[in-house]
Length: 290
Image (tube, rainbow, N blue to C red):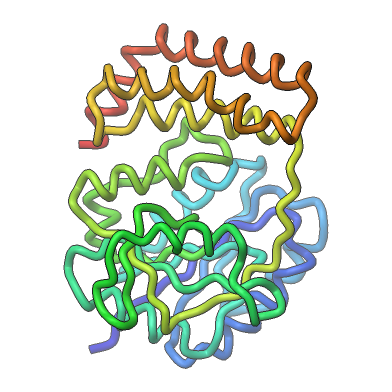
């Protein structure tokens, strides 16, 4: 029985990757529908997407960030009758059998909440470094092809409609970083599993560049994730968030001079106390996730 698979791509100044991304989808063995949500790109992204008439383009007037833009795409996909959604980064490309393999994996068990392919680097020969770190943390091998992991980044998430309807959408409090970890915490709370399908693969053409501003943002959202994690009590969540205030500067000590780490510490401490004063909002969010 044919299943409706919708690929959702969020684009922002994706000119270097979009053509290869969409051409790879075009030759997929399994037919899919593609929704592109563009976050007000200033390059030729829109023109490139419009050269693929099969792609439904949704143009945002502002940069909504990763989570909010994906929410728009997911909502539209469900409205159009999607059985599965595949969230795919703009700087990736798939292989002809990727969708088939992901569909085969996700139907292995009803408690599979998110299925990810293997992420290779742009040369298609070695694994993406960050992805490999997540994969090494696997908790169990379910079968020869399927590994369960506690987390995998959202560059390529394949999800059943039923999971989205149960878990909900990305949390809009996260502007760009951290929304995938928040979502996975909620998926796990609802007793779904995070799976790596080793027969499926994508390539992720990215170079991770560390900078202080980015690390400050990610640090704040790591604190927020701890506080919002419904797998822990509220008190434990706040305690883990407080511990992060001290642990993150220590983690970045080798990357930045002492003065930068002091700045990071006070930045995170101020953010933590802000979330203490936001306790009623935090309680509302945690209740909504359940």
